[in-house]
Amino acid sequence: MQITNFLKHHYRHFNAAALIDAADGYNKHLAEGGKMMITLAGAMSTAEMGIQLAELIRQDKVQIISCTGANLEEDIFNLVAHDFYERVPHYRDLTPADEHELLKRHMNRVTDTCIPEEEAMRRIEHTVLKFWEQADKAGEAYFPHEFFYQILKSGELEQCYQIDPKDSWMLAAAEKNLPIICPGWEDSTLGNIYAGHVISGDIKNVHTMKTGIQYMMYLLTGTLTRPPRKARLASSRLAVVSPATSRFAWCPCCTRTCSATRCRCGATSARFRTRPPATAATRAPCPTRKSRGASWARRRRNSLLKATRPSWPH
Image (cartoon, rainbow, N blue to C red):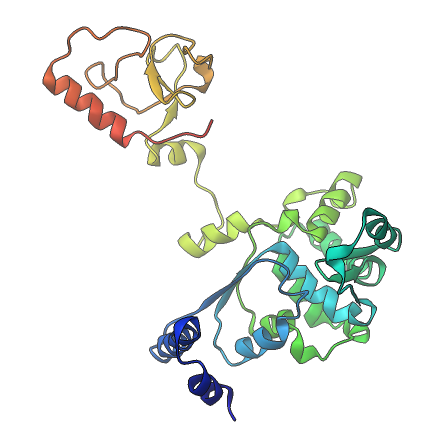
């Protein structure tokens, strides 16, 4: 029985029926020419989701992927070191001593599965470092997934494959040259290794690796160039105020407008911001001063300013 027929026959009510609705919506969306983005969080690559995801990619049911740095690299780890993985079904009962034994053996536990450091991470490190250094010397820069695509297409890892290549979603994505957004790659294992090689001087230019924020900007604007700082500030209608240019400033700490060089919350004027150009008639009163009977129009204007004022993190 086909999976579709099996689901429609057995999944009839409650959340099971919602799954059928979601699948039908997925098919309808693609049939109408829509594009699909799949997001991956958690250790889905270590859970071998590539068995399903790779086939979806090959059948053009996925056009873009957003994932964590761990999912990006762990599919490659599984590709070249699967035979050395160890499963720990009793992981809930592990004692600190048990965890220490895994650590001494360089087994990195992900829930009930241990990734072997030497066979997976170090093997990939030796290969990917060559591509990082080549790009660094050539003055080139690439996104994390683009470095992986280069490695996979070069065939350097083929002799190390320990699973069926059709079960690797990164291989399928490389064949389709699928765009991948990975904003948090720096927090992954290879991200930390990359930072280590930058610190040691093996990689001279830290920007040899492009960031996920750059990729988001590229998708939204078609360019990787950030606008100048002044333009960014102008577009957000915010500018840093110094005592020399204005004695009124908006404090991001207490979210109030102050006229003194130091707000009552303790923030200095260097941290104040305001809306340029601000006239005396549109400035909100300083909270350290008592109201002097402002007119209804002025109170209304101040309330509107407060409503549209952005909230700044502490």
